[in-house]
Amino acid sequence: MAKLQAIRGMSDTLPDQSLSWQYLESAFQRIVKRFGYREIRFPIIERTELFKRSIGEVTDIVEKEMYSFDDRNGDNVSLRPEGTAGCVRAANQHGLLYNQQQRLWYSGPMFRHERPQKGRYRQFHQFGVEAFGMAGPDIDAEILQLSASLWKELDLSEYLTLQINNIGNAEDRSRYGIALTEFLKSKAQQLDEDARNRIYTNPMRVLESKIPEVQQALQGCPKLQDFVSEASQEHYLALQGLLMRANIPFIENARLVRGLDYYNYCVYEWTTESLGAQGAVCGGGRYDGLVEMLGGKPTLAAGFAIGIERLVLMLDSLGKIPEEVRKPIDVYVLVVGANLAEQALELVQRIRTEFPQLGVVSHCGGGKYNSQLKRAFNSGARLAVILEREDTGSNDLKNAKIRRLEDSKESETVEIANILPKLGEFLQNSGS
Ligand code: HAM
Image (cartoon, rainbow, N blue to C red; front, side, top):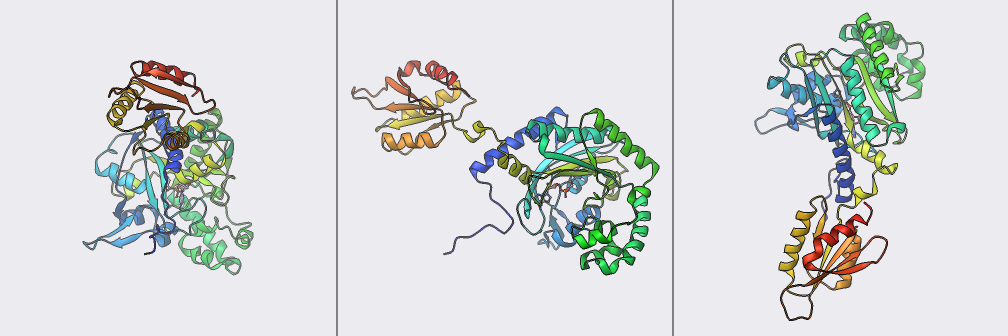
């Protein structure tokens, strides 16, 4: 029978790869803890209406990319294409947003039926942070400082550029939309079909088109900056001031409008050149109207989400995952000869108790000395402990051998009674 394969665009994360993920996950968790953010978990499936109302009916995500279906009750549900909508729904449902400030984070799989390519998948994973009840721009600066701290922690700062833009509020954009629609109507001949379809539905998305002819036609188009309200502009300028004070370089990108409808005021994106076409690693902004749109009280809000696969790709390709992360096993115990299982089990457990930070594996399943040693080398362990049945006639093991696996072949026979302190000495002398 043919081997079954995973669905296109949905990847398995194999054990070696998982080490990179864990490295990134623990860095992220350290940073959010340092900034006082708390974790929230919410379902992977929600009512489709939630995403339609928040992300917007006329967006690529809702129009073309959602995994939506009727469940057995006939309710139309969707796999979440992003986390903000579910986070707001959950926080609102449980009263976390009522007259309160919240700093929340989440992580997990998201689903979008896009055309898969390097850095773009149909199941992908995000870390997100969402802050509620704060007017900004201090909270926007804090959120960007949080992301900048993560890049620093991962030694990626020099590869990431922060782009920011001011997109005003819904009213500003609707006035701008009217002007932009008029302009695009006059250029309809030069636009591709997709852009032409968007003239009346979502004209601002035409600005993000990557087609050179469309970009050519956009020259001289009305600028959103001429339509944004004074309050939005003040917020934006104050944010820039805070970023400069915090030493977070940025560039302004007037074309950055983001693919989700809920944003207002400032939007941001961290991009890299090192991933090819899918260069956006992190995106976000303010979304002060969303909580109310989903049935809550008006609540100020801002946040971002990071694409985990893209960040892992960066870390791997730039060689930024420390070597020791790749070696989760420190001590490999060889068990050579019959009837040693009990002693091995007991000794290994003593080693684990004495050195709880180490990975300690005991060879299971028997086999010759040489083949066990080979497995010990392959495991990446620094040290081997060799338990070998002696010809003393006694059932107790008196001695064991400790052997270095990394650089030298140095080994020493030690009394079992003395093995823990000896192991400690060997570990101390073996670098990491
Ligand atoms: P987004 O820009 O749609 O924003 O996604 C955030 C990040 O997720 C992107 O920058 C990218 O790294 C990653 N990403 C998106 N689609 C894919 C894909 N198909 N494959 C791999 N990675 C992908 C949001 O999702 C908003 N909820 C962010 C936010 C939070 N805004 C406010 N709070």
